[in-house]
Length: 60
Image 1: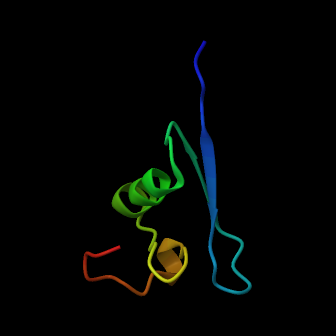
Image 2: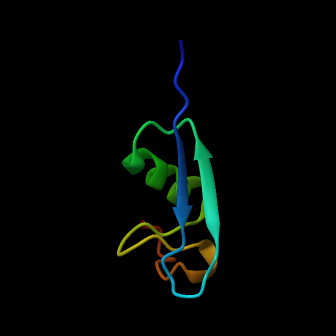
């Protein structure tokens, strides 16, 4: 038996409806790492989509 764990991140900016679906990330922390590294999301001080990512300096 295998277990697939899905995570969905929603942008925390008010009024933004962006979401990111991730499959195969086993923990929420791993999902946030993948979101930042591979998809341009900011994961510090809330989850922010690439359009609202204020941390463009290479750190999550």
